[in-house]
Image 1 (cartoon, rainbow, N blue to C red):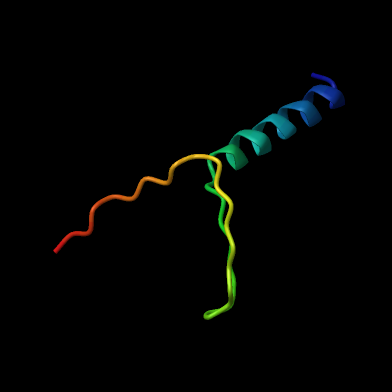
Image 2: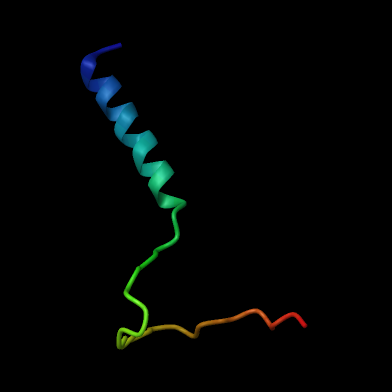
Length: 48
């Protein structure tokens, strides 16, 4: 196995691992936020 194959395989593994991560943002509490969404956001019902 060549060095190029090893690097390619490592890149593939990193890419696959990162594809499963949901996008997350962190902001300070109380900060104003403006969002633009291109699809409907679906929220699950609140449990009582």
